[in-house]
Amino acid sequence: MPLPQVVIVGRPNVGKSSLFNWLAGRRLAIVDPTAGVTRDRMTYTLCERDRYFDLVDTGGIGIVDSDDLTEHVEAQIEAAIHSADVVLFVVDALSGPTPLDEEVARRLRPVSAPVILVANKVDHEGLEIHVNEFFRLGYDQPLRVSAKQNRGRDALVRAIVEKLPSETAVEEAEPEEPVMKLAIVGRRNVGKSTFVNALAQEERMIVSEVPGTTRDSVDVRFEMDGKEFIAIDTPGLTRRKAIKTDLMFYSTHRAMRSIRRADVVLLFFDAAQPVAHTDKRLWNTILEEHKPCIFVVNKWDLYAGDVETGEWAKYLRDTFPMHDHVPIAFVTAKTGKNAKTVINHAQMLFRQARERVSTAALNKIVRAALERNPLPLASMHRQPKIYFATQVDVQPPTIVLVCNEPTAIGETYRRYLLNALRDSLPFSEVPIKLLLRKRESTPGEKDKAESEEEGLRIED
Image (cartoon, rainbow, N blue to C red; front, top):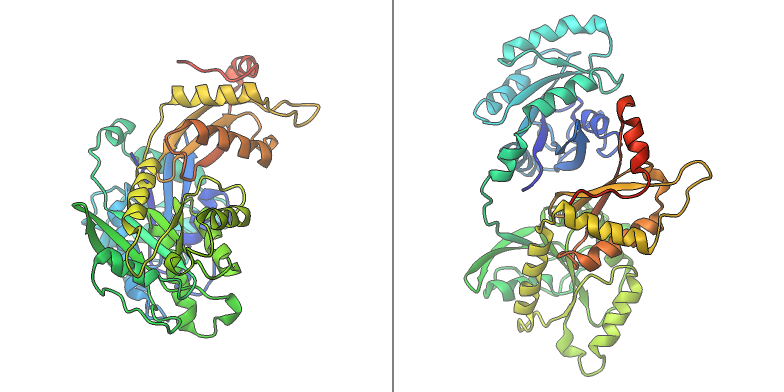
């Protein structure tokens, strides 16, 4: 089952993104005094007090977006609140309650998830008295914190963990059969809209030789073999220096956003054109978001007689090294040739990304990998050790390795472990998110920890 969602909400400029970065321990979200900087949901996986959960940052409720994206921002906020297991309602202790805070409180009252009222910017004790004014919003004692001054984090984390649903409840919840969302991305005029029309079997999207015909990401529902899918047609990307208008900028932004909300991404190429820097930008975003992907070479009917599929496949493998797990397909969007094959393969990736593997099976694979290729000595003082592995999430499959020194396990060895996992697990064609966590031991557990450092210990 998916990890619990802890969603941060509030009016603009109360410090939601600062709080997000503070809890995550990393500068992930943009922090700026300008209202409305955050538009999309940003998610980061946290482990606190032996509980894993996703922390979600959202845009400011009530902002009037300067680029007429208010509706999109509000939709993102509503979706986040709808999926929340815990809500952090953030207010500004410096400014006190405002009418917009009261509007946020009103919107949260029907929410079934527990709400924690968080008074941010309590930078010193002298400001704590002002927090009492927030009782009028109708919630329990506000938690006093300061992301800037690092005050109150432990109390906030404790409150979050206490409100998380029980692990038993999460495991027993009945999963719904989701509709696969398929983002079609690529440069301009590679045939994305034509492919969407072929899937929908109608002229659902405007198709033109004029670059930039598609200006926004558009969801198109279609059916195939009795199943429903959503194809997300996206604006074609262009070089950064060619972006000269706000419209072009936000078209690019929405294309990138479509990758984030997709289950599987089809990265389109034109068989007559070499891979460009724009394609690599898109691929980097797909990698960062850990999305399953298929490389789709379009317009193959025009060039099939001159170039063999093997040549193009090798060209893509050479251009995108160390990603041999990504499938490659050759299609003719204009006639719909091989479109069904691509969708069938996308469904396979979708299923793989949602697979779970037992802890015992994972540890056998990791133990075998360590025996074949032991961890290299990091220094004269400490040998890196991996104690155990466990899968904590799906979409993407997320595997945590608990070890003594995460920083001592280099990137080369991490890639080796990823390849070993990919070769043995049921998600061989999708990205695997590998997290290294340091095991914290109390003084009473020191002897036990030292004995376990002899190697990976697995309780079957």
